[in-house]
Length: 93
Image (cartoon, rainbow, N blue to C red; front, top):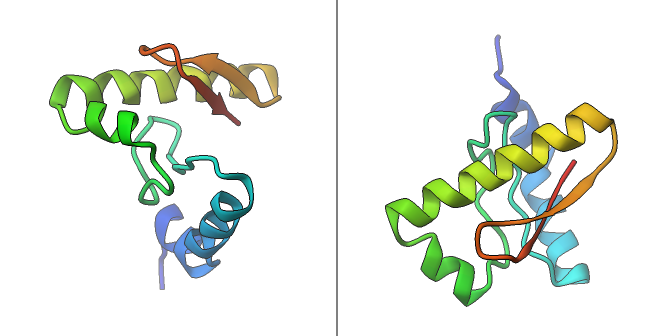
């Protein structure tokens, strides 16, 4: 039986862990692959970000920002915090 990374993470209960973290921290969380494609659904998205993500250009800018943050974190080997296209903080790890 072959499972891809998304199936493995789902099997490990990633969504439940994500929900618990957002409950405790109040942060929005979205787990993506290295290309910025969503692995989980976003948890605790603020109304402003939800509005931005309701448009194709907004989704594209948000994805580009996720990819940039993830690449910076991968390059440094440490989590990185950056500003998204709307000047909100975004973290990649």
